Image (cartoon, rainbow, N blue to C red; front, side, top):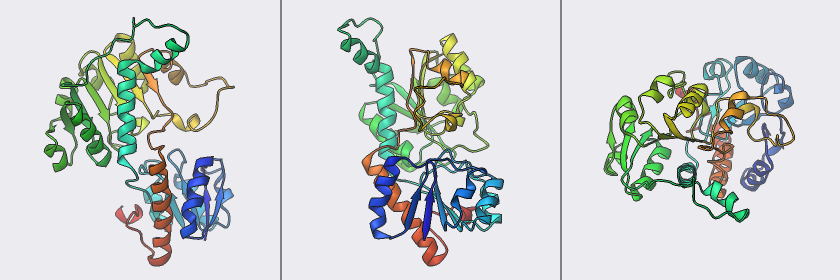
Length: 332
């Protein structure tokens, strides 16, 4: 069994090789992302293992099939980058890691909230230059603030549990209510009500065609003036240019992003010696009330260990039974 890993980083190699002691696969790691042009690199492989910014459209999947690939393993939860109908048509089962460490993303969400609110990133730089002034570092108490959570799956619930400990009022919108959220003292409301009442809004839902640019100009206009918006889910949930306009007007008071809708061109790469070619991303980075991290919410030892084990076990299930509990093609 040979597995080719696309978009592979050094930490992928470390954690997957550790997990592979239990499976004995032949693993090949390449830095290139997967698309139609790079599909030929999987020649002779039984499976490919891909990440969030690999592009598995119909043409790419057809090329993989022609190279002899039998299975596609996502080492992530999201699957908006995969044409599942095409995969099913080509007989390519797709498996994913639906829940690796909800707490990892939830804790990063809180780190973004607290850092942006209390300006600890700016304070750190000031103090290193022997500047101990507090001007411009004023924050607010999270205690008793109204937090709106869009999406109450495992990550949304993990986030709600932490915020409950801060003494926040919890609102949520989700087409599929979770009793665990209500047990935490949370209340489900319509999304427009959530926009209107929330001091902080945090996104924890998958990206689908239906919710692309869920946070658009109209949504931002209906929010509280000065609201904080946090996105650790998928970049396409936010209309970036609408967010920039809301930042310029002051309607959006704080913006924290661990994802970006055009991130596939930039994230997981060192571009420090290159010119930034994305005008929207460049503009975002000029705002003092914007905090951006490079899709690192999942990046903990516990999460990477779980991702590696579940991914390789998914392939083992496909080999043994032709099906996996984490199969996507069998659900569509």
